[in-house]
Length: 600
Image (tube, rainbow, N blue to C red; front, top):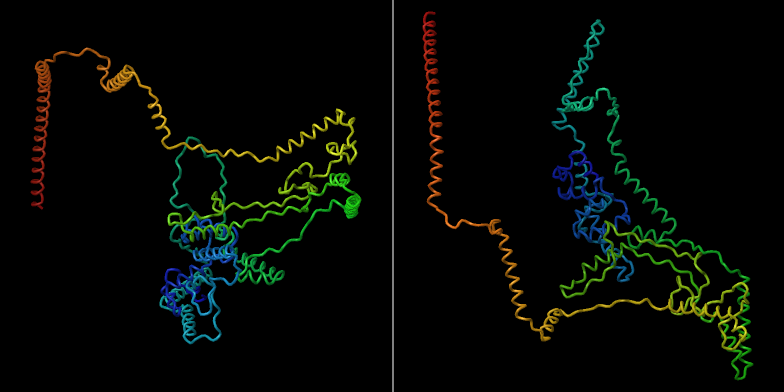
């Protein structure tokens, strides 16, 4: 790996054959794969976060087997995405089959060869290396450190000449300055455009409607000489990843200090992540120990009284009926419990199980059944998070008594299964509705306030009874036969109704009139308005009249054409005369020139 890094630094990322020649038993393809799958500094090697796992499973469902497309979206390599995806599927399969978590099935056994070694961390070099490996290392070190080739020698020679030239010019300037001659140093003009001094290909805008000569504009003047690329890009990626790696190491170190076995299992990738149970926080008790002791004493006393009544009675069940009638807590067979927090569903595990079911189970087209899947949300790139709320045990009613066979959360107690409420102005043990043993006198029954109270109690019982009824379900579906309309028409025809022939003729006539009007609308307007038409058309007279008109037009056009032709002929003759005259003048000039040259 170190040789490969140094070779990439020297030769770049386009000369893999030259890089492979430095390594023993490695091809150019293997060197390129090793760099792009593991050694490239832009590759993220930190632990997978939960958001990345959710995004991976969601994109794998949308774009199956397209790992080269999924990888840049997540920010990992394609091999990392595929490996982690298979790891999540294996974990889901173990959870579904309820198997004990054992060794990782993808972990290589002794003697096996890794099919994708380019994506794994490097093994440490052995202490006693082979001779060919030592030879390869020394040769690679010599080739990578070699700077004395032909090009390097030429560069060094040019550098020496440049330095000698600079020293000679410096010495000359010093001598001239000592002699009193001040020579200005000529600045060498740089080739190309200085982008800090001027704007290349600047085109000044044309003047607009408004005068902008008096406007003041202070442009920002950044110091380009001190500006660096880090100031523009901000924090480098390798620095950020190095910080994340340090955080991961600190987390693992803390886990090892707190819980060594689970941390070792987690780092080895064998066991799942286990949370440490937090300390149980309960609300303050609402009944003191003294009150509980008093309740126990009262219960013991009532039990003793009931046993004494059962032993003393001889066929008379009045005492036992009276005692059993006033028992309040005989229906509380189950104790009150604090409601449990609903278990949070692991969305990542559900998505992995869905993908396994879709890939393994046959579809209905192949004779299988519909695949049972967990509910998933496709509103975004990642599934929606589940909000888990802990039930409030402080603000809820602590002493309600649930009815038999009903849920204990958020339920109003049923009448007859709760402790009577104490109202001001009444005896705590008063029971106005229970009159089986004629406890209440006739005067009390005749009291209008008592009658009103009885009516209110009965209304409350009726309302509670109606509230306990199940909600009506209107799941009715009306199914009509396929040929219902045809059957209705047949029944109407079979009912014996016969249409009159006059009605049939009138309907047909109306259809014919409608078709005639439709055709008439497509014809000419004169035909639609029924205008008079010529009965007989004299074709010969019409043709003669047309011929005479054309002849008159031609007769009028002939003189104009003749005049135009004559004018063209005269103009051409004048032009020819001018050309002949000019030609004669040129000949005379030629003869005079020839005679002048012969004299000289």
